Image (cartoon, rainbow, N blue to C red; front, side, top):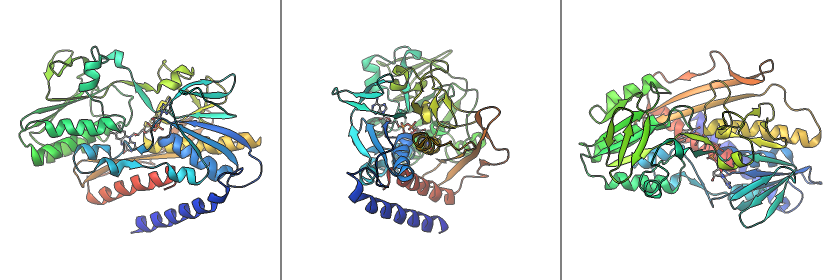
Length: 428
Ligand SMILES: Cc1cc2nc3c(=O)[nH]c(=O)nc-3n(C[C@H](O)[C@H](O)[C@H](O)COP(=O)(O)OP(=O)(O)OC[C@H]3O[C@@H](n4cnc5c(N)ncnc54)[C@H](O)[C@@H]3O)c2cc1C
C-alpha cells in the first residue's frame, strides 16, 4: 500500500508540473528568463528521456531537444512478458507527449552524425541542430560480424534477437505462437558484458511458462556462452527446477559461432543445434552513433566517461549515458542504471551551463526485477558510490543483494517499478 500511495503522490506531482509548464512551453523555459543553454539529447530510451525530463525540471530554462527515431517509447523491461503471452505490446508502449508538455522539443528522426567541431547534430533530412552540450544515449547495436552467417539478409529476417523492444518483440511472439507443440526454442546468450544480465534467463522462464500451459511437449534450450548464469544464478536454477523441469535445458560454455538460416541451425564449438525458433542475442557494443562520433575509447566497444558529469573521456562537450558506457565495476547495463546516469548528467550539465561546480560525491542505485513465472519475481539491487581516488563508481559493501526466494509480492513491485520509472522518465 505504501507503494501505491507514493505512486499516486508522484503522479499528482508530475501532473501539476506538466500543467504549470504548459503556458511556458513555447517561451524560454519552465523557470522563465533567458535560456541558460541548448542541450540536444540523442535517443529517447531510458537514459535520454530521463535526461530530457530532468534538464527541464532542474534546469528551469535549459532549451532541450530530444531526437528519437521512433514515434513512441517501447520498453525492454516487461517485454519478456509479452513473449510469454502475459502482456501485450500496448502495455509496454508509452507516448512522448508528457515530455512535450513540459517543454521538451521532440524531433522524430535519425541522427546521422554529430559534428563536434561545429557543435551540431545532423539528421537524415539534412537538418542541423546546434548545441552547447549534447547527450548521447543510443543503447546498444549488435556485433553481427562475430557470428558467421548472421548478417545475411535471410538470417536477419528469420533469426530474431528481440533485444530491442519493438517490432522484433511482436515478431518473436508470433514465431512462438506458430511453433508446433513438441518444437524446440533455442536462445543463445553472448559473453558478458551485454544489455541486462538477468534478461535472457527471465526470457527462458517466460517462454517456458507459455509452453508449460499451451505446448507442454516443447523445449526451451538455453545456450549460454558464459561459464554460468550471469545474474541471480541460484534463483534462476531453482525456477528452472521447480517450474520448468523437462522444459528448460540450460547449457553453459556454449558460445554461438555461426548460424545457418536455411535450416535454423545454431553452430556451436562442438555441436550443431537445429531449432524451430532460433532466438540469437548477439554480442553487443555501444550504439552506432557513439562509434561514428568517436566515443568508443574502451576496447573499441564502449564509451569511457567522467562519472561526475557523464562527459565522454574521448570527446569534450559530449555526455554518454546508459548501455553505451564502459561500465564501472559491478555496474549493470540496465534501464534503472541508465535513468540514474541521466540524473547525474542533467545535474552536472546545469551546473556547467551556470559556471558552477558539479556534485563531487554522486551515489546511484539499481534494482532489477525478473519474472520467473507470470506472477513470481526475484530481484537484484545495488548501490554505487563515487570514489574520488579511483575516479569511478564502486558498489557500497552490504548495500544490495538478491531475493531470498521468488514471490508474488515482488511480482507486484516489479509492475509498479515499471509504471514508476516510465512516469519518471516520460512525465506521464
Ligand atoms: C529483454 C530485456 C529485459 C530487460 N529488463 C530490464 C529490467 O527489468 N530492468 C532494467 O533496469 N533494465 C532492463 N533491461 C535493460 C534496459 O532495457 C537497457 O539497459 C536500457 O534500455 C538502456 O537504456 P539506454 O538509454 O542506454 O538505451 P535505450 O533504452 O535502448 O534507448 C536508446 C534509444 O536511442 C534511440 N536511438 C539510437 N540511435 C539513434 C539515432 N542515431 N537517432 C535517433 N535515435 C536513436 C533508439 O531508438 C532508442 O530508443 C532489459 C533489456 C532487455 C533486452
